[in-house]
Length: 634
Image (cartoon, rainbow, N blue to C red):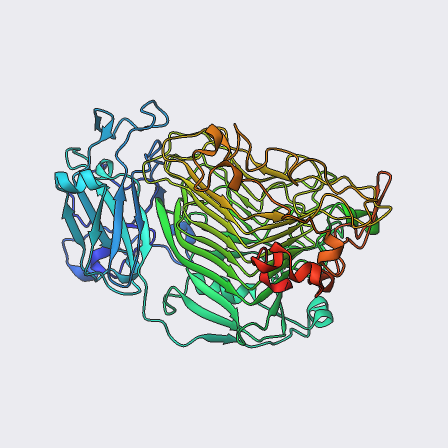
Protein backbone atom coordinates (compact mmCIF):
# COMPACT_ATOMS: atom_id res chain seq x y z
CA UNK A 1 0.00 0.00 0.00
CA UNK A 2 1.07 3.57 -0.74
CA UNK A 3 -0.66 6.91 -1.10
CA UNK A 4 -1.50 8.18 -4.56
CA UNK A 5 1.38 10.66 -4.45
CA UNK A 6 3.91 8.00 -3.46
CA UNK A 7 5.98 5.72 -5.67
CA UNK A 8 6.09 1.91 -5.74
CA UNK A 9 9.83 2.19 -6.38
CA UNK A 10 10.71 4.22 -3.26
CA UNK A 11 10.83 2.11 -0.12
CA UNK A 12 9.91 4.99 2.22
CA UNK A 13 6.67 5.52 0.28
CA UNK A 14 5.44 1.98 0.98
CA UNK A 15 3.05 2.18 3.94
CA UNK A 16 2.27 -1.56 4.10
CA UNK A 17 4.16 -4.61 2.82
CA UNK A 18 2.94 -7.86 4.27
CA UNK A 19 2.47 -11.56 3.45
CA UNK A 20 -0.60 -13.47 4.62
CA UNK A 21 -1.47 -17.15 4.48
CA UNK A 22 -3.67 -18.74 1.81
CA UNK A 23 -6.71 -18.83 4.10
CA UNK A 24 -6.68 -15.07 4.87
CA UNK A 25 -9.27 -13.50 2.57
CA UNK A 26 -9.70 -10.12 4.29
CA UNK A 27 -7.28 -7.58 5.78
CA UNK A 28 -8.48 -4.67 7.90
CA UNK A 29 -6.32 -1.54 7.86
CA UNK A 30 -6.73 1.08 10.56
CA UNK A 31 -5.27 4.52 11.33
CA UNK A 32 -5.04 5.67 7.73
CA UNK A 33 -4.74 9.33 6.78
CA UNK A 34 -7.97 11.24 6.15
CA UNK A 35 -8.95 12.55 2.69
CA UNK A 36 -6.15 10.61 1.03
CA UNK A 37 -6.18 8.29 -1.97
CA UNK A 38 -4.47 5.00 -1.18
CA UNK A 39 -3.17 2.61 -3.85
CA UNK A 40 -3.03 -1.16 -3.34
CA UNK A 41 -1.25 -3.96 -5.18
CA UNK A 42 -1.46 -7.72 -4.58
CA UNK A 43 0.62 -10.66 -5.78
CA UNK A 44 0.24 -14.42 -5.29
CA UNK A 45 3.42 -16.18 -4.16
CA UNK A 46 4.34 -19.67 -5.37
CA UNK A 47 6.09 -22.29 -3.28
CA UNK A 48 8.19 -23.00 -6.36
CA UNK A 49 10.07 -19.69 -5.99
CA UNK A 50 10.47 -16.22 -7.52
CA UNK A 51 10.10 -17.22 -11.14
CA UNK A 52 6.63 -18.65 -10.48
CA UNK A 53 4.98 -15.76 -8.61
CA UNK A 54 2.03 -14.01 -10.24
CA UNK A 55 2.31 -10.51 -11.68
CA UNK A 56 1.32 -7.64 -9.42
CA UNK A 57 -2.33 -6.68 -9.72
CA UNK A 58 -3.42 -3.17 -8.78
CA UNK A 59 -0.44 -1.12 -9.89
CA UNK A 60 -2.07 -0.38 -13.22
CA UNK A 61 -0.42 2.02 -15.61
CA UNK A 62 -1.17 4.42 -18.43
CA UNK A 63 -2.21 1.52 -20.67
CA UNK A 64 -3.93 -0.48 -17.92
CA UNK A 65 -6.08 1.97 -15.98
CA UNK A 66 -8.61 -0.72 -15.04
CA UNK A 67 -5.92 -2.58 -13.13
CA UNK A 68 -5.36 0.27 -10.67
CA UNK A 69 -6.78 -0.31 -7.18
CA UNK A 70 -7.32 3.06 -5.52
CA UNK A 71 -9.54 4.00 -2.59
CA UNK A 72 -9.97 7.37 -0.86
CA UNK A 73 -10.50 7.71 2.87
CA UNK A 74 -13.24 9.98 4.14
CA UNK A 75 -12.93 13.62 5.11
CA UNK A 76 -12.14 14.69 8.63
CA UNK A 77 -14.63 17.41 9.46
CA UNK A 78 -14.74 19.96 12.26
CA UNK A 79 -10.99 20.69 12.31
CA UNK A 80 -10.16 23.73 14.49
CA UNK A 81 -7.72 26.26 13.05
CA UNK A 82 -5.14 26.07 15.85
CA UNK A 83 -1.71 26.12 14.18
CA UNK A 84 -0.34 28.75 11.78
CA UNK A 85 3.07 29.87 10.56
CA UNK A 86 4.65 33.27 9.99
CA UNK A 87 8.06 34.99 9.82
CA UNK A 88 9.48 32.42 7.40
CA UNK A 89 13.16 32.90 6.50
CA UNK A 90 15.65 30.63 4.71
CA UNK A 91 16.18 28.48 7.80
CA UNK A 92 13.65 29.54 10.47
CA UNK A 93 9.93 29.93 11.01
CA UNK A 94 7.62 30.91 13.85
CA UNK A 95 4.81 28.44 14.60
CA UNK A 96 1.79 29.97 16.34
CA UNK A 97 -0.94 28.10 18.18
CA UNK A 98 -4.23 29.58 19.33
CA UNK A 99 -5.64 27.14 21.88
CA UNK A 100 -8.94 28.91 22.56
CA UNK A 101 -12.03 26.81 21.82
CA UNK A 102 -14.32 29.19 19.95
CA UNK A 103 -17.23 26.82 19.32
CA UNK A 104 -17.23 23.31 20.89
CA UNK A 105 -20.46 22.15 19.27
CA UNK A 106 -20.56 19.65 16.37
CA UNK A 107 -20.19 19.97 13.44
CA UNK A 108 -17.99 23.01 14.17
CA UNK A 109 -15.69 20.83 16.28
CA UNK A 110 -14.87 17.15 15.74
CA UNK A 111 -15.16 15.19 19.04
CA UNK A 112 -11.64 13.77 18.51
CA UNK A 113 -10.14 17.14 19.52
CA UNK A 114 -9.64 17.20 23.29
CA UNK A 115 -9.98 20.42 25.27
CA UNK A 116 -10.08 21.45 28.89
CA UNK A 117 -11.18 24.73 30.52
CA UNK A 118 -11.89 26.21 27.10
CA UNK A 119 -8.43 25.40 25.68
CA UNK A 120 -7.25 22.69 23.31
CA UNK A 121 -4.64 20.21 24.51
CA UNK A 122 -1.39 20.54 22.57
CA UNK A 123 2.00 19.13 23.53
CA UNK A 124 4.12 18.87 20.38
CA UNK A 125 5.01 20.71 17.17
CA UNK A 126 6.19 18.50 14.32
CA UNK A 127 7.90 19.95 11.23
CA UNK A 128 8.38 17.29 8.53
CA UNK A 129 9.77 17.52 5.00
CA UNK A 130 7.20 17.23 2.22
CA UNK A 131 7.44 14.44 -0.33
CA UNK A 132 9.29 16.63 -2.85
CA UNK A 133 12.27 16.77 -0.44
CA UNK A 134 11.59 13.68 1.65
CA UNK A 135 15.21 13.03 2.64
CA UNK A 136 15.50 16.09 4.88
CA UNK A 137 15.36 15.60 8.66
CA UNK A 138 12.25 16.37 10.70
CA UNK A 139 12.05 18.69 13.70
CA UNK A 140 10.08 17.59 16.76
CA UNK A 141 9.50 20.13 19.53
CA UNK A 142 7.97 19.16 22.87
CA UNK A 143 6.06 22.19 24.13
CA UNK A 144 6.75 23.59 27.59
CA UNK A 145 4.24 25.51 29.66
CA UNK A 146 6.19 28.67 28.82
CA UNK A 147 5.72 27.92 25.11
CA UNK A 148 1.99 27.44 25.63
CA UNK A 149 1.79 30.73 27.52
CA UNK A 150 3.66 32.55 24.73
CA UNK A 151 1.45 31.04 22.04
CA UNK A 152 4.32 30.27 19.68
CA UNK A 153 7.67 28.54 19.21
CA UNK A 154 10.51 29.40 16.85
CA UNK A 155 11.91 26.58 14.72
CA UNK A 156 15.49 26.83 13.40
CA UNK A 157 17.89 24.68 11.41
CA UNK A 158 15.63 24.18 8.40
CA UNK A 159 16.73 23.93 4.77
CA UNK A 160 16.43 26.86 2.32
CA UNK A 161 13.84 26.52 -0.47
CA UNK A 162 12.49 23.29 1.05
CA UNK A 163 8.80 22.50 1.49
CA UNK A 164 7.71 21.45 4.98
CA UNK A 165 4.51 20.16 6.56
CA UNK A 166 3.81 21.64 10.00
CA UNK A 167 1.52 19.96 12.53
CA UNK A 168 0.54 20.45 16.13
CA UNK A 169 -0.18 17.24 18.07
CA UNK A 170 -1.98 16.13 21.19
CA UNK A 171 -0.20 12.88 22.02
CA UNK A 172 -2.85 12.02 24.58
CA UNK A 173 -4.99 10.79 21.67
CA UNK A 174 -4.44 7.15 20.74
CA UNK A 175 -4.96 7.30 16.96
CA UNK A 176 -2.11 9.15 15.21
CA UNK A 177 -4.20 10.96 12.59
CA UNK A 178 -6.57 12.15 15.32
CA UNK A 179 -3.66 13.66 17.27
CA UNK A 180 -3.14 16.27 14.56
CA UNK A 181 -4.76 19.67 14.45
CA UNK A 182 -4.85 21.61 11.18
CA UNK A 183 -1.87 21.13 8.86
CA UNK A 184 0.23 23.93 7.33
CA UNK A 185 2.43 23.61 4.25
CA UNK A 186 5.36 26.01 4.33
CA UNK A 187 7.98 26.79 1.70
CA UNK A 188 11.21 28.19 3.10
CA UNK A 189 12.84 31.18 1.49
CA UNK A 190 15.66 30.24 -0.85
CA UNK A 191 18.74 31.58 -2.51
CA UNK A 192 17.39 33.70 -5.31
CA UNK A 193 18.82 33.46 -8.75
CA UNK A 194 19.20 36.42 -11.08
CA UNK A 195 16.00 38.25 -12.07
CA UNK A 196 14.25 36.62 -15.01
CA UNK A 197 13.43 38.86 -17.96
CA UNK A 198 10.20 37.83 -19.65
CA UNK A 199 10.95 38.82 -23.20
CA UNK A 200 8.27 40.56 -25.21
CA UNK A 201 7.21 37.97 -27.82
CA UNK A 202 3.91 38.44 -29.63
CA UNK A 203 1.97 35.32 -30.60
CA UNK A 204 1.27 35.94 -34.27
CA UNK A 205 -1.56 33.38 -34.24
CA UNK A 206 -3.56 35.39 -31.69
CA UNK A 207 -5.51 38.20 -33.39
CA UNK A 208 -6.02 40.19 -30.19
CA UNK A 209 -2.37 39.87 -29.14
CA UNK A 210 -1.28 41.09 -32.58
CA UNK A 211 -3.71 44.02 -32.46
CA UNK A 212 -2.36 45.16 -29.09
CA UNK A 213 1.25 44.08 -29.71
CA UNK A 214 1.05 42.10 -26.47
CA UNK A 215 3.05 39.15 -25.13
CA UNK A 216 1.30 36.47 -23.04
CA UNK A 217 2.16 36.43 -19.34
CA UNK A 218 -0.22 34.19 -17.36
CA UNK A 219 1.25 30.82 -18.40
CA UNK A 220 4.74 31.82 -17.25
CA UNK A 221 3.54 32.98 -13.83
CA UNK A 222 1.33 29.93 -13.29
CA UNK A 223 4.15 27.53 -14.23
CA UNK A 224 6.38 29.23 -11.66
CA UNK A 225 4.00 28.16 -8.88
CA UNK A 226 4.96 24.48 -9.27
CA UNK A 227 8.58 24.93 -10.34
CA UNK A 228 10.74 23.85 -7.39
CA UNK A 229 13.86 24.99 -9.23
CA UNK A 230 12.82 28.62 -8.74
CA UNK A 231 12.92 29.89 -5.17
CA UNK A 232 10.03 31.75 -3.64
CA UNK A 233 10.61 35.47 -4.15
CA UNK A 234 11.88 35.09 -7.73
CA UNK A 235 11.90 38.41 -9.59
CA UNK A 236 10.28 38.54 -13.02
CA UNK A 237 10.97 41.61 -15.14
CA UNK A 238 8.82 42.92 -17.98
CA UNK A 239 10.22 45.07 -20.75
CA UNK A 240 9.45 48.70 -19.93
CA UNK A 241 7.03 50.37 -22.31
CA UNK A 242 5.91 47.01 -23.77
CA UNK A 243 2.48 45.32 -23.57
CA UNK A 244 1.74 41.96 -21.96
CA UNK A 245 -1.60 40.23 -21.43
CA UNK A 246 -3.35 37.57 -19.38
CA UNK A 247 -5.03 34.78 -21.33
CA UNK A 248 -6.39 33.28 -18.08
CA UNK A 249 -6.32 33.79 -14.34
CA UNK A 250 -3.05 33.77 -12.39
CA UNK A 251 -2.68 31.98 -9.03
CA UNK A 252 -0.54 33.85 -6.48
CA UNK A 253 0.37 31.11 -4.00
CA UNK A 254 4.16 31.50 -4.10
CA UNK A 255 5.88 34.79 -3.38
CA UNK A 256 7.25 36.68 -6.37
CA UNK A 257 8.01 40.13 -7.70
CA UNK A 258 6.78 41.33 -11.08
CA UNK A 259 8.26 44.64 -12.18
CA UNK A 260 9.38 46.72 -15.10
CA UNK A 261 13.03 46.29 -16.03
CA UNK A 262 13.49 50.08 -15.96
CA UNK A 263 12.54 51.70 -12.62
CA UNK A 264 9.75 54.31 -12.81
CA UNK A 265 8.98 53.35 -16.43
CA UNK A 266 5.89 51.20 -16.57
CA UNK A 267 5.21 48.10 -18.60
CA UNK A 268 1.54 47.42 -19.34
CA UNK A 269 -0.36 44.26 -18.42
CA UNK A 270 -3.77 43.84 -20.02
CA UNK A 271 -5.95 41.76 -17.70
CA UNK A 272 -7.62 40.19 -20.74
CA UNK A 273 -8.04 40.92 -24.44
CA UNK A 274 -11.13 40.54 -26.61
CA UNK A 275 -14.54 39.05 -25.85
CA UNK A 276 -15.87 35.71 -24.67
CA UNK A 277 -17.07 33.00 -27.06
CA UNK A 278 -20.69 34.17 -26.79
CA UNK A 279 -19.58 37.75 -27.51
CA UNK A 280 -21.56 38.93 -24.48
CA UNK A 281 -18.76 40.16 -22.23
CA UNK A 282 -15.24 41.46 -22.41
CA UNK A 283 -12.45 39.16 -21.22
CA UNK A 284 -11.10 40.43 -17.92
CA UNK A 285 -9.18 37.92 -15.78
CA UNK A 286 -8.18 38.23 -12.14
CA UNK A 287 -5.19 37.36 -10.02
CA UNK A 288 -6.05 34.85 -7.26
CA UNK A 289 -4.26 35.12 -3.91
CA UNK A 290 -3.90 31.72 -2.25
CA UNK A 291 -5.11 28.57 -3.98
CA UNK A 292 -7.56 25.72 -3.84
CA UNK A 293 -6.47 22.37 -2.46
CA UNK A 294 -5.22 19.74 -4.88
CA UNK A 295 -6.16 16.08 -4.66
CA UNK A 296 -5.33 14.69 -1.23
CA UNK A 297 -4.23 18.02 0.24
CA UNK A 298 -5.44 19.22 3.60
CA UNK A 299 -4.46 22.10 5.86
CA UNK A 300 -3.11 25.54 5.06
CA UNK A 301 -0.33 27.18 3.08
CA UNK A 302 2.02 30.11 3.49
CA UNK A 303 2.78 32.61 0.76
CA UNK A 304 5.80 34.92 0.70
CA UNK A 305 5.90 38.52 -0.50
CA UNK A 306 3.78 39.23 -3.59
CA UNK A 307 5.06 42.47 -5.12
CA UNK A 308 4.20 44.47 -8.25
CA UNK A 309 6.36 47.47 -9.18
CA UNK A 310 6.07 49.91 -12.09
CA UNK A 311 3.20 48.17 -13.90
CA UNK A 312 0.18 49.68 -15.64
CA UNK A 313 -2.71 47.23 -15.21
CA UNK A 314 -5.67 47.65 -17.57
CA UNK A 315 -8.79 45.68 -18.43
CA UNK A 316 -9.54 47.40 -21.75
CA UNK A 317 -12.56 45.26 -22.68
CA UNK A 318 -14.29 45.29 -19.29
CA UNK A 319 -17.64 47.08 -19.43
CA UNK A 320 -18.82 49.24 -16.53
CA UNK A 321 -22.31 50.64 -15.97
CA UNK A 322 -21.64 53.91 -17.80
CA UNK A 323 -20.16 52.18 -20.85
CA UNK A 324 -22.94 49.65 -21.35
CA UNK A 325 -24.84 52.02 -23.66
CA UNK A 326 -21.87 51.82 -26.05
CA UNK A 327 -21.99 48.01 -26.20
CA UNK A 328 -25.54 46.83 -26.91
CA UNK A 329 -26.00 43.12 -26.29
CA UNK A 330 -23.07 42.91 -23.88
CA UNK A 331 -23.20 42.44 -20.12
CA UNK A 332 -21.50 44.53 -17.50
CA UNK A 333 -18.25 43.04 -16.21
CA UNK A 334 -17.69 41.78 -12.68
CA UNK A 335 -13.90 41.68 -12.64
CA UNK A 336 -11.26 42.49 -10.01
CA UNK A 337 -7.52 42.92 -9.74
CA UNK A 338 -7.33 40.13 -7.13
CA UNK A 339 -10.27 37.89 -6.29
CA UNK A 340 -9.75 35.04 -3.86
CA UNK A 341 -11.51 31.77 -4.61
CA UNK A 342 -14.19 30.91 -2.03
CA UNK A 343 -12.73 27.38 -1.68
CA UNK A 344 -9.16 28.58 -1.12
CA UNK A 345 -7.11 26.81 1.55
CA UNK A 346 -6.37 28.73 4.75
CA UNK A 347 -3.29 30.85 4.08
CA UNK A 348 -0.85 33.34 5.51
CA UNK A 349 0.78 35.82 3.12
CA UNK A 350 3.69 37.88 4.40
CA UNK A 351 3.07 40.89 2.11
CA UNK A 352 0.99 42.13 -0.79
CA UNK A 353 2.61 45.26 -2.23
CA UNK A 354 1.94 47.45 -5.26
CA UNK A 355 4.23 50.38 -5.89
CA UNK A 356 4.07 52.96 -8.69
CA UNK A 357 1.35 51.02 -10.49
CA UNK A 358 -1.77 52.28 -12.23
CA UNK A 359 -5.12 50.52 -12.40
CA UNK A 360 -7.92 50.91 -14.92
CA UNK A 361 -10.96 48.82 -15.77
CA UNK A 362 -11.39 46.73 -12.58
CA UNK A 363 -15.16 47.11 -12.39
CA UNK A 364 -16.48 45.20 -9.39
CA UNK A 365 -13.60 45.56 -6.95
CA UNK A 366 -9.84 45.69 -6.53
CA UNK A 367 -9.05 43.08 -3.85
CA UNK A 368 -11.67 40.74 -2.44
CA UNK A 369 -11.36 37.90 0.05
CA UNK A 370 -14.10 35.34 0.58
CA UNK A 371 -14.77 31.88 1.95
CA UNK A 372 -14.88 30.35 5.42
CA UNK A 373 -11.16 29.56 5.82
CA UNK A 374 -8.59 31.68 7.62
CA UNK A 375 -6.90 34.41 5.58
CA UNK A 376 -3.96 36.32 7.04
CA UNK A 377 -1.98 38.98 5.18
CA UNK A 378 0.69 40.39 7.43
CA UNK A 379 1.23 43.52 5.30
CA UNK A 380 -0.70 45.25 2.52
CA UNK A 381 1.25 48.18 1.08
CA UNK A 382 -0.14 50.45 -1.66
CA UNK A 383 2.17 53.35 -2.53
CA UNK A 384 2.49 55.85 -5.39
CA UNK A 385 -0.36 54.20 -7.31
CA UNK A 386 -3.02 55.75 -9.53
CA UNK A 387 -6.58 54.42 -9.60
CA UNK A 388 -8.80 55.87 -12.33
CA UNK A 389 -11.48 54.70 -14.75
CA UNK A 390 -12.32 51.96 -12.22
CA UNK A 391 -15.53 50.83 -10.56
CA UNK A 392 -19.04 51.83 -11.71
CA UNK A 393 -20.41 48.29 -11.32
CA UNK A 394 -23.96 49.65 -11.18
CA UNK A 395 -25.79 52.99 -11.08
CA UNK A 396 -24.83 53.34 -7.41
CA UNK A 397 -21.18 52.52 -8.03
CA UNK A 398 -21.28 49.58 -5.66
CA UNK A 399 -19.67 46.19 -6.17
CA UNK A 400 -17.08 45.59 -3.46
CA UNK A 401 -14.62 47.73 -1.52
CA UNK A 402 -11.13 48.49 -2.77
CA UNK A 403 -9.90 46.20 0.07
CA UNK A 404 -12.82 43.96 0.91
CA UNK A 405 -12.65 41.67 3.94
CA UNK A 406 -15.16 38.89 4.58
CA UNK A 407 -13.98 37.23 7.78
CA UNK A 408 -15.67 33.97 8.71
CA UNK A 409 -12.80 32.82 10.94
CA UNK A 410 -11.84 34.51 14.22
CA UNK A 411 -8.22 34.36 13.05
CA UNK A 412 -8.73 35.99 9.65
CA UNK A 413 -6.79 39.24 9.44
CA UNK A 414 -6.06 41.08 6.20
CA UNK A 415 -5.84 44.45 7.97
CA UNK A 416 -2.91 43.55 10.23
CA UNK A 417 -0.80 46.32 8.71
CA UNK A 418 -2.33 48.24 5.82
CA UNK A 419 -0.40 51.22 4.44
CA UNK A 420 -2.03 53.34 1.72
CA UNK A 421 0.29 56.26 1.01
CA UNK A 422 0.96 58.74 -1.83
CA UNK A 423 -1.80 57.43 -4.10
CA UNK A 424 -4.53 59.09 -6.16
CA UNK A 425 -8.09 57.86 -6.45
CA UNK A 426 -9.64 59.76 -9.35
CA UNK A 427 -13.39 59.30 -9.89
CA UNK A 428 -13.16 55.80 -8.44
CA UNK A 429 -16.61 54.39 -7.68
CA UNK A 430 -16.18 51.21 -5.72
CA UNK A 431 -18.46 50.72 -2.77
CA UNK A 432 -15.97 51.71 -0.06
CA UNK A 433 -12.20 52.05 0.45
CA UNK A 434 -11.79 49.51 3.29
CA UNK A 435 -14.49 47.17 4.58
CA UNK A 436 -14.74 44.40 7.18
CA UNK A 437 -18.08 44.15 8.95
CA UNK A 438 -17.70 40.80 10.73
CA UNK A 439 -18.28 40.86 14.48
CA UNK A 440 -16.32 37.87 15.76
CA UNK A 441 -14.61 36.95 18.98
CA UNK A 442 -11.29 37.90 17.42
CA UNK A 443 -8.24 35.82 18.31
CA UNK A 444 -5.69 37.64 20.50
CA UNK A 445 -3.28 37.76 17.53
CA UNK A 446 -5.78 39.75 15.43
CA UNK A 447 -5.16 43.50 15.55
CA UNK A 448 -5.84 45.98 12.75
CA UNK A 449 -3.39 48.76 11.93
CA UNK A 450 -4.44 51.03 9.08
CA UNK A 451 -2.49 54.00 7.71
CA UNK A 452 -4.05 56.24 5.03
CA UNK A 453 -1.67 59.09 4.36
CA UNK A 454 -0.87 61.69 1.68
CA UNK A 455 -3.51 60.48 -0.77
CA UNK A 456 -5.66 62.52 -3.15
CA UNK A 457 -9.36 61.59 -3.40
CA UNK A 458 -11.06 63.38 -6.31
CA UNK A 459 -14.76 62.48 -6.61
CA UNK A 460 -13.76 59.16 -5.05
CA UNK A 461 -16.42 56.92 -3.51
CA UNK A 462 -18.72 59.86 -4.19
CA UNK A 463 -21.34 58.70 -6.67
CA UNK A 464 -23.91 57.78 -3.99
CA UNK A 465 -24.33 58.35 -0.27
CA UNK A 466 -22.66 56.30 2.50
CA UNK A 467 -19.69 55.07 0.48
CA UNK A 468 -17.32 55.24 3.43
CA UNK A 469 -13.57 55.64 3.43
CA UNK A 470 -13.37 53.09 6.25
CA UNK A 471 -16.19 50.74 7.18
CA UNK A 472 -14.84 48.59 9.98
CA UNK A 473 -17.85 47.98 12.18
CA UNK A 474 -16.14 45.93 14.90
CA UNK A 475 -12.35 46.39 15.10
CA UNK A 476 -10.39 44.06 17.40
CA UNK A 477 -8.90 45.37 20.62
CA UNK A 478 -5.77 47.56 20.34
CA UNK A 479 -6.40 48.44 16.69
CA UNK A 480 -5.16 51.78 15.38
CA UNK A 481 -6.12 54.08 12.51
CA UNK A 482 -3.69 56.72 11.23
CA UNK A 483 -5.27 59.08 8.69
CA UNK A 484 -3.13 62.11 7.84
CA UNK A 485 -2.45 64.70 5.16
CA UNK A 486 -5.08 63.44 2.72
CA UNK A 487 -6.74 65.76 0.20
CA UNK A 488 -10.46 65.42 -0.54
CA UNK A 489 -11.97 67.09 -3.60
CA UNK A 490 -15.52 67.19 -4.92
CA UNK A 491 -15.90 68.94 -8.28
CA UNK A 492 -18.20 69.08 -11.28
CA UNK A 493 -18.53 71.40 -14.25
CA UNK A 494 -21.45 73.71 -14.95
CA UNK A 495 -24.45 71.81 -16.28
CA UNK A 496 -23.45 68.53 -14.62
CA UNK A 497 -26.44 67.24 -12.61
CA UNK A 498 -24.57 64.57 -10.68
CA UNK A 499 -24.92 64.64 -6.88
CA UNK A 500 -21.68 64.48 -4.92
CA UNK A 501 -21.16 62.71 -1.61
CA UNK A 502 -18.27 62.06 0.74
CA UNK A 503 -18.45 59.78 3.78
CA UNK A 504 -15.93 59.18 6.53
CA UNK A 505 -15.94 56.29 8.99
CA UNK A 506 -18.38 53.62 10.07
CA UNK A 507 -17.14 52.11 13.34
CA UNK A 508 -19.71 50.63 15.70
CA UNK A 509 -17.74 48.78 18.38
CA UNK A 510 -15.08 50.47 20.50
CA UNK A 511 -13.08 47.67 22.10
CA UNK A 512 -10.32 48.38 24.65
CA UNK A 513 -7.16 49.88 23.21
CA UNK A 514 -8.74 51.22 20.00
CA UNK A 515 -6.97 54.44 19.02
CA UNK A 516 -6.77 57.05 16.26
CA UNK A 517 -4.14 59.40 14.92
CA UNK A 518 -6.12 61.62 12.55
CA UNK A 519 -4.82 65.07 11.64
CA UNK A 520 -3.98 67.49 8.81
CA UNK A 521 -6.62 66.31 6.34
CA UNK A 522 -7.79 69.02 3.94
CA UNK A 523 -10.43 69.60 1.32
CA UNK A 524 -11.14 72.13 -1.39
CA UNK A 525 -13.96 74.62 -1.04
CA UNK A 526 -17.67 73.86 -0.85
CA UNK A 527 -18.51 76.10 -3.81
CA UNK A 528 -17.04 76.84 -7.20
CA UNK A 529 -14.79 79.85 -7.66
CA UNK A 530 -17.74 81.92 -8.97
CA UNK A 531 -20.08 80.58 -6.25
CA UNK A 532 -22.46 79.29 -8.94
CA UNK A 533 -22.01 75.57 -8.16
CA UNK A 534 -22.32 73.92 -4.76
CA UNK A 535 -19.99 70.95 -4.42
CA UNK A 536 -21.01 70.12 -0.87
CA UNK A 537 -22.84 71.70 2.05
CA UNK A 538 -21.94 71.68 5.70
CA UNK A 539 -18.93 72.54 7.78
CA UNK A 540 -16.92 69.60 6.41
CA UNK A 541 -16.71 67.94 3.01
CA UNK A 542 -17.97 64.70 4.54
CA UNK A 543 -21.73 64.73 4.63
CA UNK A 544 -22.06 61.30 6.29
CA UNK A 545 -20.25 60.23 9.47
CA UNK A 546 -17.10 62.34 9.17
CA UNK A 547 -13.94 61.33 11.02
CA UNK A 548 -15.20 63.61 13.83
CA UNK A 549 -18.48 61.68 14.28
CA UNK A 550 -19.21 61.13 17.97
CA UNK A 551 -20.60 57.59 17.81
CA UNK A 552 -19.24 56.06 14.60
CA UNK A 553 -15.98 57.92 14.12
CA UNK A 554 -12.88 59.15 15.92
CA UNK A 555 -14.96 61.80 17.70
CA UNK A 556 -16.15 59.12 20.12
CA UNK A 557 -16.05 60.28 23.75
CA UNK A 558 -15.23 63.82 22.69
CA UNK A 559 -12.24 62.72 20.63
CA UNK A 560 -10.50 61.15 23.63
CA UNK A 561 -9.23 58.25 21.52
CA UNK A 562 -7.52 60.53 18.95
CA UNK A 563 -3.95 61.69 19.49
CA UNK A 564 -4.76 65.32 18.70
CA UNK A 565 -8.23 65.37 20.22
CA UNK A 566 -11.54 66.11 18.52
CA UNK A 567 -10.54 69.19 16.55
CA UNK A 568 -7.72 67.36 14.73
CA UNK A 569 -10.22 64.85 13.32
CA UNK A 570 -12.00 67.50 11.25
CA UNK A 571 -11.25 67.91 7.54
CA UNK A 572 -10.17 71.52 7.05
CA UNK A 573 -10.33 73.87 4.09
CA UNK A 574 -7.64 76.07 5.60
CA UNK A 575 -8.25 79.72 6.55
CA UNK A 576 -9.06 80.63 2.93
CA UNK A 577 -10.86 77.83 1.06
CA UNK A 578 -9.63 77.20 -2.46
CA UNK A 579 -11.92 76.02 -5.24
CA UNK A 580 -10.87 72.81 -7.01
CA UNK A 581 -10.70 74.57 -10.38
CA UNK A 582 -8.35 77.15 -8.85
CA UNK A 583 -6.16 74.46 -7.31
CA UNK A 584 -5.93 72.23 -10.39
CA UNK A 585 -5.75 72.83 -14.12
CA UNK A 586 -8.96 70.88 -14.83
CA UNK A 587 -10.41 68.63 -12.12
CA UNK A 588 -13.75 68.02 -13.86
CA UNK A 589 -14.95 64.72 -15.35
CA UNK A 590 -15.05 64.58 -19.15
CA UNK A 591 -18.72 63.53 -19.22
CA UNK A 592 -21.74 64.90 -17.37
CA UNK A 593 -24.99 63.64 -16.00
CA UNK A 594 -27.95 65.36 -17.65
CA UNK A 595 -31.08 64.73 -15.66
CA UNK A 596 -30.80 61.01 -14.91
CA UNK A 597 -28.73 60.16 -17.99
CA UNK A 598 -25.04 59.52 -17.52
CA UNK A 599 -22.58 60.22 -20.30
CA UNK A 600 -20.32 57.16 -20.96
CA UNK A 601 -17.30 59.25 -19.92
CA UNK A 602 -18.83 60.52 -16.67
CA UNK A 603 -16.07 58.75 -14.75
CA UNK A 604 -13.14 59.65 -17.04
CA UNK A 605 -10.71 62.50 -16.30
CA UNK A 606 -7.90 64.29 -18.10
CA UNK A 607 -5.05 63.24 -15.81
CA UNK A 608 -2.90 66.18 -16.90
CA UNK A 609 -5.69 68.41 -15.62
CA UNK A 610 -5.18 67.13 -12.07
CA UNK A 611 -1.85 68.97 -11.80
CA UNK A 612 -1.66 71.98 -9.48
CA UNK A 613 -1.60 75.48 -10.89
CA UNK A 614 1.44 77.63 -10.14
CA UNK A 615 -0.46 80.64 -8.86
CA UNK A 616 0.07 82.60 -5.62
CA UNK A 617 -3.28 81.31 -4.35
CA UNK A 618 -2.05 77.71 -4.73
CA UNK A 619 1.57 78.22 -3.67
CA UNK A 620 0.55 79.98 -0.45
CA UNK A 621 -2.28 77.65 0.49
CA UNK A 622 -1.77 75.07 3.30
CA UNK A 623 -2.64 72.27 0.85
CA UNK A 624 0.58 73.15 -0.97
CA UNK A 625 2.79 74.43 1.85
CA UNK A 626 1.98 71.52 4.18
CA UNK A 627 2.37 68.87 1.46
CA UNK A 628 -1.20 67.61 1.52
CA UNK A 629 -2.31 64.84 -0.84
CA UNK A 630 -0.46 62.86 -3.49
CA UNK A 631 2.81 64.69 -4.23
CA UNK A 632 2.78 63.76 -7.93
CA UNK A 633 0.41 66.62 -8.82
CA UNK A 634 2.53 69.49 -7.42
